[in-house]
Length: 458
Image (cartoon, rainbow, N blue to C red; front, side, top):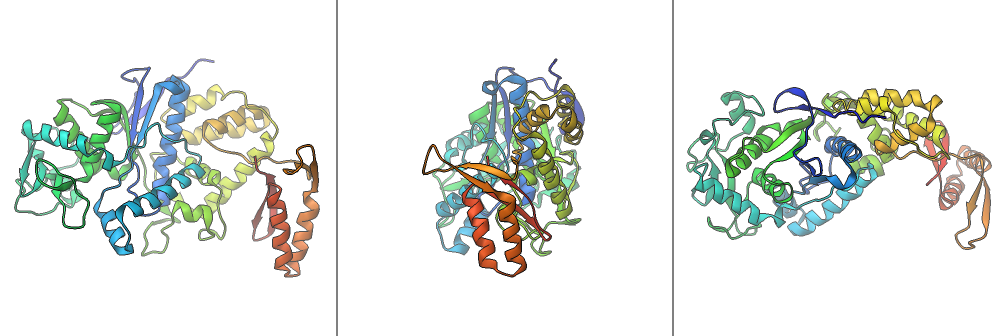
C-alpha cells in the first residue's frame, strides 16, 4: 500500500498545501498549551485532540523517532497571580495542582504525551535573550521599566491575521500607556509589583509578556524555524501574529513556522460557552460528574464526539452528539472484541492525510465494521480511540489472590438482580452489586432506562 502525501490547510497562505518538512528526519510541531490557573474547559480540549491526531499521523508517515511535538505550559500570567491571591495559596501551589489535573484529563482523552512540555518559568533566559536581540536590531525599546515591540518596525506585521489596522487595534484590546510609542506596540517585559513573580533582567525585576513565552520555548526546543505551529482560531490574533513578529525579527527570518494550523470555535448546545449562561463545562466535569447530560462521559466518547466535525469548522457540543458517539464506540467495540488489529486502510489514510478530513475517515471506518473489523480496530488505534471489550454474559475472571484460580461470573444474572433491587428502591443492594462487578473489572453502562450494556475493562 502506497503512503499518501499529507496536505495541510495553511492559515498563513489561506490554501491547502502539500506538506514538505524542513528535515524529514526531524519533523517539528509546536502547539500552544494551557495557562494553568483553572481546569481546562471543553473548548481547550479541541486543539489537544486535533493535534494529537496530527502527531499520531506524522509518526505514522515519518517514523516515531523522527517527529518532535512540543506543547507548552504557561505558568506565569496575570490570571495565575489573581487566582492564587483569590484562593490564598502560592502561585506554585496553584500551577502544580492545576497542571496535575490537566495532565490526568488529557490522558483520559486518549492523547499521547508530547515529546516536550516546557514551562514558561524555566525559559526566562531565552526570553531575555530574544528581547535583547530585538532591542539591538531596532525592533523593540525599553521605557519606564517595560520593554515593548515596535510594531511599525515590521512592515509584514498582520500577514497571518490579514486584518486592517483598525481591526487589529480593536482585536488587541490595546493598553493605553504614556511610555508606548505606538498604539499597537505590545509588551515583551513588564515590571513586577511586590508579591508578584519576578526575575532580574537588564530592565529591572520583572516578568515576561504572554507572547514572548512561546517564541522562547519554540526556539529552545525546535529552532529558529520549524514545520508546524498549531492552536485554536482565537489565537491567530494577537498571540500568533505577535509570536511571528518577535521570532522573525529576532532571528532575521521570513517565517517562524512554515505551516500554521488552527481549529475552529466550539459552542455548547447552540450557544457560546460562558459562565454567565451556565453552560461553561470543563473536561474534568465531563469525565467525573453528571453535570452534562446527567451522566459521566468516558474519555473515548468525548474524543470521538470532537473528531466527528472537521477540525477547521465550528463545533456544537451537545448531549445528543455525545450519545451518538457513545453508541458508535459501543458498536465498534462489539465488532472488534477479541480481534487483533491489522493496518489502517488506504481509503482511511487518504482521508486523514487530506487536511485531517476526519469526518470522511470515520465514514470509511463505518464501512469497515462489516467487511474488515481488524482494519477498523487499527483505524481506531490510529485515532487514539480506546474501545470497550465485550464478552459473553458468562465470564471467567482471574482471581487476583490465587494465580491459578478463576471466578465464574454470570453478569446478566447479577444485572437482573440489580435492576430488581432498583425497582424495589433498595439502593444499598443495587450499589453493592455494582461494586461487586466493578471489583471484578466489569463496568456497567447506565442511562435513564436502566443498564444498557457492560464491558470488561482491558
